[in-house]
Length: 585
Image (cartoon, rainbow, N blue to C red; front, side):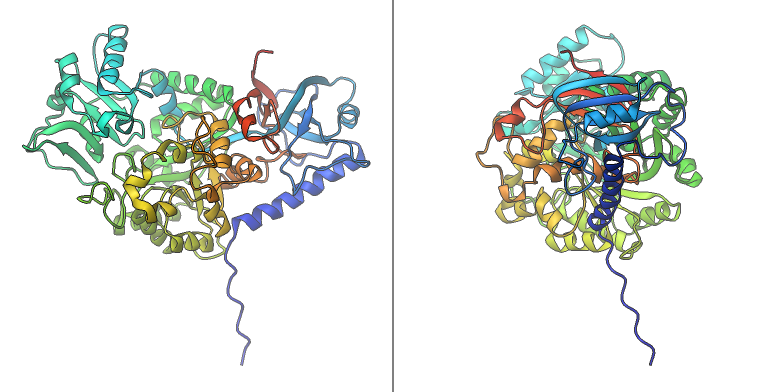
C-alpha cells in the first residue's frame, strides 16, 4: 500500500517573514564582519542618481533584519548606514561605514536619533488625502452648528459655484450623537449644493439643493448596498449611507488630471513630513492611477505606492485584464472590493443586530455569490485580492469567498482590510489560509468611546483584536486609512502599543491584552507591510541590497517609556536614498 503523502502545511506568513529576516540578518552580519559593503544583486533602481555614497549616522539603527540588531565584533553599536545609487550597501558601526564608503562619501549625522526602515502605511487613500486637504475640514467639530459655520466660512472664501465639499464630521462627537439633518445646511445654502463626507467616508450629509439635484425624495428607494436616512414621514433627512452616496456623487463633475495631480502633490508632502516612504493605496481609480504612473515616469512621485485597483471603477476592467505590474515607485498588484460599510455609521455588516440599534444589522454591499465571482475574477487575473470588511458577518463572508480560491500554502497574500470585528473561528481560518489582516490601530482609539455600545460587551472582545490575531498566526499589516485618520504613523504606533489616546486614556489601555509590543507595532508599519505588498526581499528592513527607504526618528521606538510617545518626532525621511523631508533643527 503506498504511503500516504503528508498534508500541505498551512502557509504561515509570520514564519516566512522570520525566514527572510534570518537571510537578511546573515547578509548584514557578513557585511559588518568583513568591514566592507556587501555586493548588490541586480542593477540600481531606474533613474537613481549616480552620486557619491552617503553615510547616515545616528545614535542607533533598528534594522529589523533579525531577532536583534547586529553588532560588529567586540560589540560595537550599529549606528550607520551607507547608501549608494538608491540602495543600502553597508550597515554597521560608523567607523567601518566611513571606511566602506570611501573618501568621496558625504555624511549626514543625526545625533541622538534612531534610523528605522521606512514607514509604510498599509491602507491609505493617497488621492483622497490630497482632496481632503483642499476641502472643508470638519474633523473635531463639536456640533452641527459648528460644522455648518465651518462650511459657511470656507465657502465665503472659496469658489462661488459648484458643490461645496467637506469631510470629517462625526455625530458621535456631538450632543445626543444623532445623525444630522439637512435643515441647518439648507438654511445656510438654499441654492448651492453641499456634500459633506462623514469621517469614515461611508456617509454623506447633504442639503436640500443636493437632494433636488440628485432627484431624491420620499419615493426614492434605498439602492442595493446603501440606505437613505428618513424622518417619520419617510422624507430623506439628508444623510446617505454607503451606496446611497452615489446618488449625489454621480452628479459631481469628474476630476481633471490636473486636479488629481494637485491632490497627489499635496498628499506626497504630507506623507513625507510624517515619515512615510510608501503607502498601499486602497482603491485607486483608473484616472488616479494614470496620473500616478505619469508622475512616476517623470521622477515626480518620490513615494512607493502599492496600488489596489478600485473594483467599482468600470475603467479598471482593462487594467485587470492586463494583469499585475511591478515598478520601482508604482506597483499595480491588488484589487479592492467593499463587503460592507463602517461601524460608526452602522453600515458594518454584523451577524446579529447592533446593540444600540436592534432594528439593523448593517449593510452588506458586495456579498455572497457576487463577492465570490469578483474574488475569482481578480484571482484568475493574478491579482492580490483585498476586501474591506468591518463587521463580523462581512469578515466571515470574505473568508468563505477566499477559501474557495485559496489552499494552505499557496501564498496569494489575500487581505481583509480593517478586519475590525472578526470571530475567533474566522481568525483561525485566516491563519490557515495565509490571509493578511490589514488593520489600523488609531481606529481603536478613535472608536473606543462608542464601539462597545454598538457591539455589546461580548462581541466587542472580537474587535480590534491585534494580539489575538497574531497569536492565531495572522500577519498584521498596519496603516491609518487616511484621510479617515491622520496620515501620521506615530499615533498609530502609539495606539498599537498603549491602546490609549493622546491623553493616555484610559489608564492602562482599552482592553490592554490586545496591545502589541513595540517591535510588533514597528514591524506592522515596515517589514510586515512590505510582505503584504510582495516587497519583503527589498524593503521593510535595513540590510545590504535593500532599497534605501529610511525614516529617522528622534528616539528609539522600541525602548520608549509611556511618556516618551508624547515627544517622539520625525527627524528626516529618505526615499531611494534621497532626503525628501528634514525637520528644522
